[in-house]
Length: 445
Image (cartoon, rainbow, N blue to C red; front, side, top):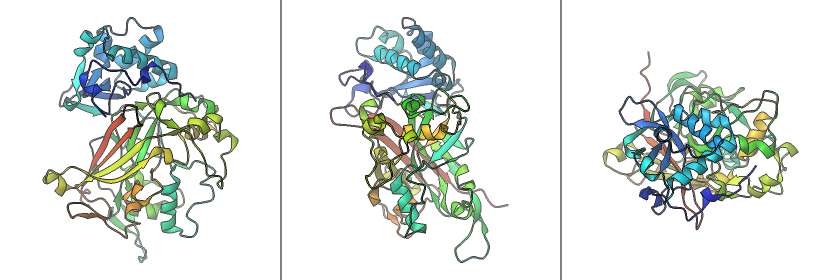
């Protein structure tokens, strides 16, 4: 697990792309997140790009212009992978040294004074003129449950005297989710149909979900791979992590309450999940790491989930925001309103621990696999990462500035999530946003 800083993190770096140098811009030259894009409304092939200021650098065009020809063999290999592909899987498969080499090359090419400015200027597309596809082909998706604040609040709704199950503080809890319904920001989510059972009913009923919710999560993209049967130890765990994105794991709470025992979520989760188009590399987040700790009165992790590096810099200081824009707000031209603000560093389990635990039984991870952190809530009630928590299980409506109220999501609502890593004296590392709008359920037949 390495967070060594290098020249790409220099706070004094400036880009010849002027918009990247704006105060508090989310995509400065110290960020350089990856995504898949094309010109909006076109039938162009999808290609890999890097966000820089208000633009996207087309890596296929940059490669064709010969920008990477003067770099070392590893950099040229990484550049060729992204140039010829329509997803990040090829780059993810090359491993951490290749990721770092390409990041360094891009940083040097985009800096003020770069000899490649003329060639690259023609390889830029304004972000406002682009549309996005999934950044990677996801093979497997595992959703975890890393926030003890979320787990405790939800547990109190059902088990007031014993909110946490006995295993929570010992083992990272997760379940395998559905890949086919994961979409990129801008996804339109059809309200799901399913079985529900009212507490006072003798039999379940079938119909549209009435308690639709969002879950604020961080997505973790895996790179490299481990052979079947070979665990990844903590010391190597973060070398398998390509980068992070934002994830909204939509949830049908009433469907979930009826179906989740004994095998956990099924139709309540598989209808949709939405991720942000940009993947911020773990290397870009190196300056925003902090020490990880466990309260003294809690059990400390078993040896395979612990390490000196974890204690020193295992947490990531990443501010997370959820906003809502109702149909009425949109029609009135009103901007989305914030619902909550929390931080990834409050997670009970770290990124490295999730990788180590997922593979300890010999499970093999592959490039492009995705982990979800689980709903990320902070210690204060207003830091909750779901409406289920903000409304206290549906008992108290959340009041909006325009006079509307929400207990759960209604048709026409758009949920927006944003994230930024920031510290005094350092540039802001932004993730863009993940947005999704709820459509009415399909008519019953």
